[in-house]
Length: 274
Image (cartoon, rainbow, N blue to C red):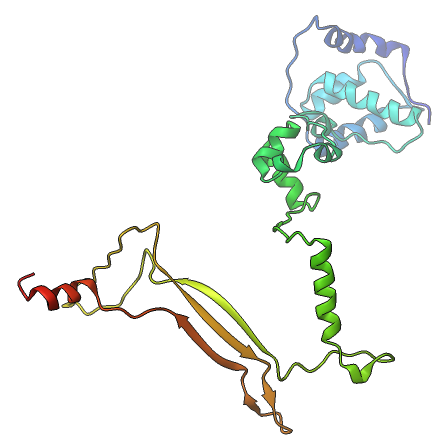
């Protein structure tokens, strides 16, 4: 259907031209979708072969208690949709065109930032020039991922050969060369040492109300004494019924020297007056 204004309707469009040229200050409220559909239905009902008679938009505006300019804008939207051959859509385009516009930043910019500036959201956002909330949103949407990196030992050629030689020596010679398998390792003991602090900076105790608070002292809280423990474990063993006959724990030994306390030693020498 070819929709066009009648010759007599041009006078009714003077208000729109004045508004476009900025000669007339006009303020009106935003129409709801239901009001726009009501205007659309009223205009189509009063149109004849896609044309409006004189003052039709004025009468529709008075009937629906809206601005004449808004009625004219709805009618122009109808004409645009028909002229472009698409379904008529009189909904407001303000939600798509108003508000703060997003800053277009491509994720490829992240690749240009060196890794030492990508250790946290704050430094990465500053490097690519976007707010922290934007980077955080990318992370929540799955566009960025967090990776925890740990230091790896630097293996030289000799280290690699030693590791390969150790793996080869753990092969069961009876299974070579067709079906190589590792030995069961039941007769191998694995020792390892570990350093532990003799105490902690903070401890929690459960005491009775009449008990005195314990008093812990060290010479330097940042240099607490340590003790080295040696642990030996082996592979657990099970019988034919599945019962554990050996849990694999051999023992834990502390490398310490027991010496008399200095105060006790001086008391024995100098007497009890100290």
